[in-house]
Amino acid sequence: MADFKPLHPLGNLDELVEKHSFFGPGSAAITIGVRKSVECAQLFAGNGNQAKIAKKLNFDSSTGKATETKGFTALPIAPGQWILISKNSAPGFADGVAKSINGLGYLSQQSDSRICLRVSGPKARELMSRGCRLDLHESHSGAGFCAQTVMAQIGVILHQLDDNPTYELYLYAGFARSFFHWLSHSAAQFGCDIEIISNQIKR
Image (tube, rainbow, N blue to C red; front, side, top):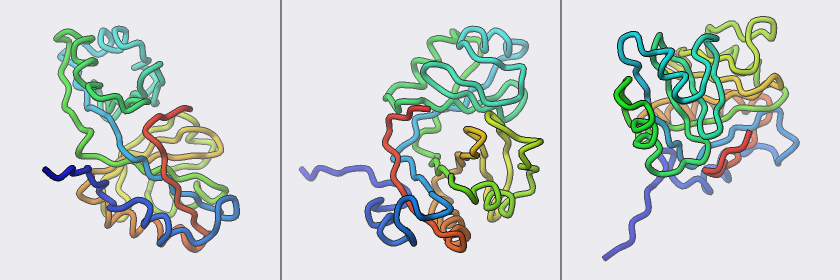
């Protein structure tokens, strides 16, 4: 029997790097990082259980910003709703979280339906500001900033990781190729390098 390996929504990632890197590492003003995979789940708090779930999972639900735990990042997307991003892409992440909350809410597995792209470099803020209507000026957004927006007519969750700034963009896999085409070509004016990010995420 043939041994089939899952293919990333963007196709062969080695070929992607070769095709779209316009400058070598360190010489481009924009670096687009492609996560090999994303282990994540959407968490919905039951009525009145928002604070209980946050306490149970050890993250802050009061700031409106992304918060970090040892095992995942919680991205707020609506009152009582978060996207939880596993830091090590370990299988069974959603099942483990579901057991932890013990009926206080429910989870929707999202790992196969979303991709993550990371945008960094000296021109990252300018590129992101051109692509969406969010106010990304440093006086209004900083590390932990998280919001849903539309870029290239595609729904995106934008998460600012740090004050450099570095951004992570989460979108549905079905739009991956169209969005990457827009993003890489928009970044080409600044000089663009593509890198592949392993499953083990350290911040």
